[in-house]
Image (cartoon, rainbow, N blue to C red; front, side, top):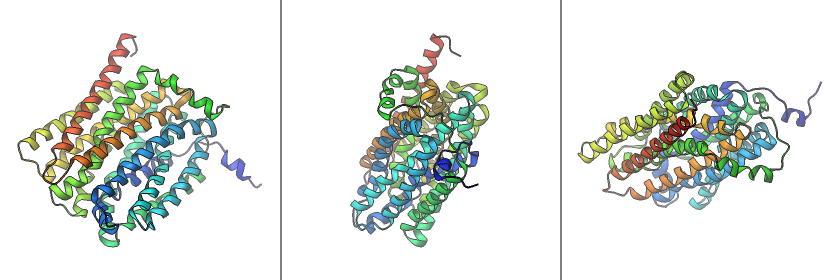
Length: 404
């Protein structure tokens, strides 16, 4: 018996975990696979490096704005429908970046690519749809552990592709990956949300309820500040590697993946131990790990002893800390108002990405020939300290009301 397109769009079945991992990995690939090619792209479009660096910060700005709406829309119309539409739009936008005749046109399509953020937002919401809060932290940890392989391998692959075939090859890789994930979502991901019969405008009016929840803000800011160190790294590390240390694109790609290795390790630990130690302890451990690593790196840089191996090696603590913080802080955010999981995921992600865009742009603007790596390291140190303060606030609040 044939199945109508409408029925297939609405079919209900939980996805395999591999589907959730690949769905979350696509935005990660889009974020950083092309970073070793920024100087080549600037030369191709006959513009300055800082203009092409906007392909990171502008992408993050649009990314943040879209998350505000993707969450509520998916709560209303379902995860599956939203993912199918947004990934298809991402595939079209990627073609635009490949054939763009000018830097301005390229950046326009690059901003349009930000629609792929639906994969990150809704992969987390899907997890929260199908499991409880403690198990969600564990499952998100395993999902992001698998996802971490992408940012670890992508710059290496991107640098090699750029040297062999030119910078456009990185965007062809995004195109093929987008088509593959779209087909996988169509085939495997059934609807997991319990749809709410509300107008989108009514759902958006529920935002104040979420924004008035102190624990949401505690988890949200812990996540935002922790990831802020990583986004600053994204904006500044290519300059540090290429200009300060004189690496070529392939070498930069190899070094650049160090935080992703730490991120994978941190996510494994989250998946293994979050249910045992609880969300708050895991987040605190992650923030202190990053703070320790960046503090040591600042001291070494101040003493004039930084090398590429030391800089990128100790930057792995940013990934390790984020791997402990992000799954647990995300599970905390989504559990404050469980019936608004998609909305919470979108809003929390928007705040995180907006801050990341600002920090990425700030890092790119402060790093100039002769500055060394110190401006980037101080930004990363300050944001990490903010994440420590945020989770300490949550812990103290929970103790004051007797919440374990």
